[in-house]
Length: 144
Image (cartoon, rainbow, N blue to C red):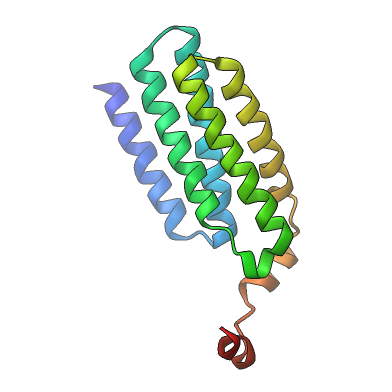
């Protein structure tokens, strides 16, 4: 009963946080969620809890796939292409981790995602604000 109440509170707190978040914060929240699921998946593998492993790896994979889907190739260029390839590699590693019950592959994905998150978190607030307030010009709209 207590766990259910805590989980419900956490879910509502996340909804509230997301409601007021800009796109940078949403990406931060997604990355943090994926990292949390990867930790749980690694523990589940180590304890041979196959049901929990499948649940946590499935959720982590879904989040990473969503992150991959958020990439803006027009604005990001080569960086977006590299991130797409890295997210795809991470998804492949998680599939292998699922099939092989391999905690080391989950850890590898965690390390990679932590590096990406560190870089994302390091984007200065003024750059974030400038990017968020940049509306497409008529010329860029016509070019599409």
